[in-house]
Length: 161
Image (cartoon, rainbow, N blue to C red):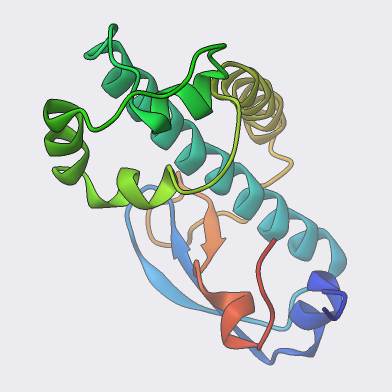
């Protein structure tokens, strides 16, 4: 796998597609300098952490609805010291109602530790955002911060990690 140099990728683009995290305004930034590059990349990580936190909290709520279930996904993600039971139809039905969560739970992680890490990361990035570290001010609402389109690096042929 090739190394991704996100700053270099941003510097090569003549028009960087962005959107405002508040008002949704979209547009393109001309070539970005290092400060804007750092801000856009930092904001991207912050938004990624927020998305994962949402998925982890949804996982936590789903598991809490089935406290006695030994469904393989619950056993795996909570690292329970028991053998997983067979199917739990009620849990399976609840999981089918959230396709995004169902896909997310295919990843391997220990829910309590991952939640702790992501919450710490969100808190850290939120503080940095409050102090303007990630601010590329929206010129439409003057409140929001411009963000890279989610698929920006994939469109350049990189896996966004």
